[in-house]
Length: 263
Ligand code: SAM
Image (cartoon, rainbow, N blue to C red; front, side, top):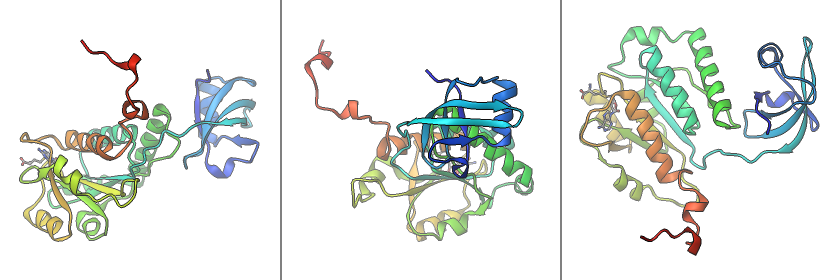
């Protein structure tokens, strides 16, 4: 079974092969010590992945000969996680877990109660680090689509946009089960949606009011106040359960006698 997974941007693919970018090639040659003839996987960050054979591996670079395409494990739910900027280690944790759980993108939010120092800390270097964390998580969980981590945006801007907006509120929201019933499915595919999660200091009254006025649904995650990172990851997991791919075809397949375990 091919073990190593590599990323190469779609423009470095031809119909027959893919060339790894410099950092991936360096890692492949000097850390993983791949050999010509070795079987690996490669993905293009836009949803395509292949089995491949190492055709060249040297200081000049790594070229992979493409074999068959691999099936996608991307969720049918296009979920944006819009989460307030948190302390560096917590935000990185959220990025890693959210990517593993299949979100389409993460948007760091500037809100009334996000400390100004945290916003100032989002430098170009920090954004590059977040992109690396997202890419490593993508590799680890076998996804083939990269999850962009956007530059920070004011929550008011995002609330002004159209679409299904679920505003996770530490107080006063509706049960997620009721909200799920109300999110009308016009087709079999779930609508794209954005989950909003506030900062450690919580949402301001004005933000809650803007959310309601914008047509967002206020949603509760139960009677306990959760850390923002817990709330973010729980929200993603529950939305994947409700609209995404946590329920497999095997689970929903008609019952077969051999699968029955009646006591
Ligand atoms: N400091 C606030 C307080 O004491 O009320 C708590 C804010 S909480 C740590 C951070 C964010 O996580 C909230 O703004 C909300 O988005 C989300 N959150 C936490 N607990 C939640 C719950 N029980 N239901 C829904 N969202 C929750």
